[in-house]
Length: 354
Image (cartoon, rainbow, N blue to C red; front, side, top):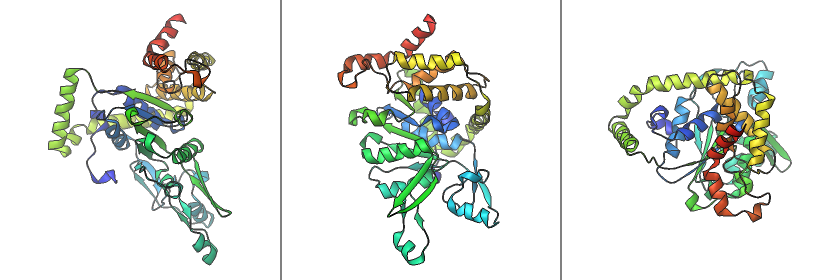
């Protein structure tokens, strides 16, 4: 669906769900975090937040008419067609536009996701012709998978591989085609409809569990805001435009600050200690926690990562990786659920001990 054809509820008007909105922003600041998996029951603003995020992000500069959304200032990251034009001295026309949200349908095939090579055209014309997939359209945007737990595991693997590398490689009959595939990966799921395999779960940079708002006053506020939006979405969007602009500026400054923010060895050691406390497998959690802490510091306008930043990062990164035993097959599920529920308490306790 093309969300640009309908009014989108403002990101800054979302009531509650602070952890979700912040996690989305941190991924937008640093896409190499590896995406966000949002677990929660229906009606908790998961889809609304994802679609609204694109409208609050700063505009990006692209090569006009390029289906890969190439960045004209990144010569190395240009698609083969744009590189060929530059090589022949043809200047690339540019334009600015909003970040796009690409929806991945549950029934998507491998060719629909990756794209495919037109072999018949290659044989007849002696030239490669690439049929775009969803990963090409998602480059420099947001790839959104609703009910990701219901998607074919093989397709999820392909998407996670591309998200990790930032590159999509299509190989058919000895012919290969490569293009940039840098995107913010957002998956949403209702755990009642089934779980993701642990191997796939770990590949998401962050995971959060969200629930409906329990404060009666906040629920009433949510209802009233939504009613106003439904009655006159244009006026409602205008009312929140200044908030949207302020948030967009804050995100843009954070992205610019990211390469310059420092993290001390002590804070990196804390990342590793928190991962060890959670008995995570491998080192992915440590690496992603560091990136997340840097993004948090950038967003808050700090020049160096603090312990508070690391603790918040741990709360976002460890939820889906935490184990109560070094052996996954011997996990007591009740203990695991209790440990996950008390993860923020565990982090604060760790902070007091230090």
